[in-house]
Amino acid sequence: MPVERIGGDAERAIESVLRQDVPFPFELILVSAAPLVIAVGTGVRNVIEPNRNPATRRNRAVSEARGEILAFIDDDAVADAGWLDTAISYLDAHPDVLALGGPDPAPADSTRAELIAETLLATPFIGSGVACHENRPGIFAVTSPSDVALVNLFVRRGAFPGFDESIGYIGEDTSLIASLLPAVVYHAGVRVFHRRRPFPGPYLRQRWRYRVKTGEMLARGSAPYAKNRKIRAFLFVAAIAIIAAPIAIVPYVVTTLILGARTTRLPRRDWIVLPFAFAAHHATYFAGIVWGWIRGRLR
Image (cartoon, rainbow, N blue to C red):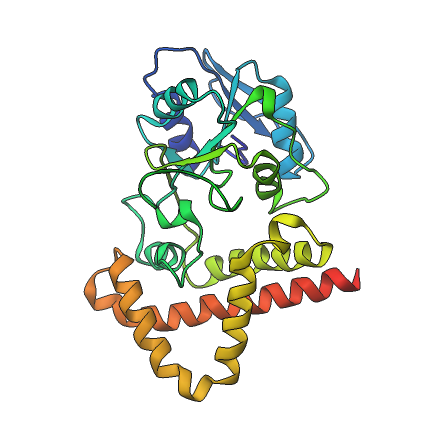
């Protein structure tokens, strides 16, 4: 677990891991740029890595890990009570599976702004298109490396190739998962509750950074991105929608309202904001990918 500072979400994240009731030993490694002011007990270690590259930090923590299974979680996520037990039981029963991930819905105490962000990510067809963000049910083989995320990921130590530190922030998990396909599984019972960035400002800034990296990776010809049909389909549909905006606006509002209302946990009185939120979300995705691709090509 990379940790910037102790307090609030980080304390809840740490507590959620330490309270896991499992019949096997495990250790929690907190990796930070400077020593953490925390009472480190049995089974908890603080590994120091001044380099703030997330891939470097996690690789450093893995180099210190003693377990046979590596479990990755963020410091703003809370692990479900059965998180470790469910994941390890499945991996024990399926030795051919190299990596396992699951859903990361927003926690129950989310604010209105956080629930809007969750709706934008979780709505099928018009949201993120990512299985873990959509909280999909069931257990199935992962075909798209973006369907599970680093906030909730298990990897066998013997199969772990290390995160690509040249990628930097955003995309290192997609690259890792792509290298382990087709031996990666999504399991709905392996669940963490992940705090969403509030909409609009923090959420849209985060999405912009993510999609600029998507565009850059496309420009580099990275296989997980270049072969992703969802990205090409989104760019095509978005371009058509921009060209046909005068006649597309009403169907767009109706579609986003209906699909968003079926997914959201917002009270009914707030549903009216959904079409506007989706418009900002889609515009940020499209502009971010295009700008990232241009910047990648110029480099």
